Structure formats: structure tokens, C-alpha cells
Image 1 (cartoon, rainbow, N blue to C red):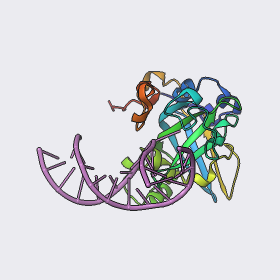
Image 2: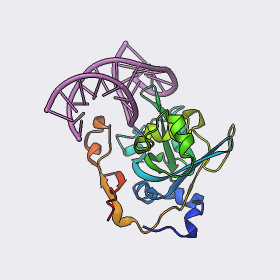
Image 3: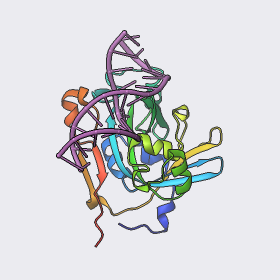
Image 4: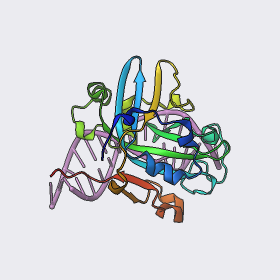
Length: 205
DNA sequence: CTTTAGATCGTCT
DNA sequence: GACGATCTAAAGG
């Protein structure tokens, strides 16, 4: 995998307007996620994602066109964020995709920490870099993404907080694995869809 | 390494 | 009133 100067280019809105949420989930592997909170920058390379495919996906919060106050965000045009509280504790971070009216989203499940390591360790109250952001609840906590920010646009600012994505690493398609999504046993046959994407474990040589 | 139980609260029924 | 797109600590192998 490599990263040239284009790695710092911000992902444009068109990237999130795709009508193929599974492809977007795959393409987000290797991209960079960044947040800025009151002047503190944190960033990480996206290492794990899951696609959630609108009204026909039994695993999606918007399955069966369930338009509620919470899921309304998912119906927005691609490029805003959907953050919700899970198990009463964890903020889970999604990017909304597709055109307005179609509630597709990609759950970001893990990042490889880059910048702002000290701040992320402090937010997570740990000194172990290996378990810093390797789960959807952990990365949100490490990067300061709170469910109260649900609905904002990537790149916009609210109460001193902003989140966006950059090009990151390209030419990594050979390093991506796929498999069934996690924690959605209730979704019947849709639980088998290979809509989870991960970076392969890198072995040093 | 694996398994297991407990925490905790907004959202929807 | 039930449950969940999870995490942690503790205990055992």
C-alpha cells in the first residue's frame, strides 16, 4: 500500500452519493478519518467497516422504511454522519451514503491510530495502543465522536467539533477481506451477507 | 488465547 | 417494558 501527496486530499461529497453502499464500505478501507475538537486533532486509518443497505436490509435501523426521529438522519443525502447510542453506553459512528430518501449508511468499526495518540489514550483511559480504536465504540470514544453530533455534515463544525475523511492509502484492494456483519443475528438471511470489510493483518517481513 | 457476565440508557413498541 | 450494529474485567486453559 502506498500514500503519496494525494493521501491528504479530502474525500469529496460525490464519494458519498454512490448508490452502491457495499462498494463505498469497501472503498473506505484505507481512508483516513480525522476529527478536530477544540483545536485537538486526532486521526486514524479506517481498518474495518460494515455496509447497511437501506429499507430492504433486515440488519438496518431503517429496515421496512422505519422513519423515526433517530433514523431520519439516514434518509438525508450522503455525506452527513449518523451516530447513535448502543447498549446505553457506546456511540457508534456511521457515514450516510446515497441520494436523499435512500437510508444507506456505512458503520466505521475500527481505525489504526495516527495523530493525537496521547489525547486518544486519555479519552479512552488506557495506555495500550493496541486496543485503542479496534472497535466501533472504542474509535468513537478515542476520536471524541459523540452521539449528540449525529446529523452534522462531514467537514462542518458544531460546538468546536468537526469530523472529515481524506484519501489516505490507495492500491490496497488486495489487502481487504470480507465477511458477515457482527451482532445482527436477528437479521435472518441478511445476517449472512458479506458486507463487513477489514484490512488484512499485516505481517512484517 | 477463550468464555462469560454485567454495565447502562435512548429508542421504539 | 424490552432490547441493542458493544466493551471490559475476571477467570480458566
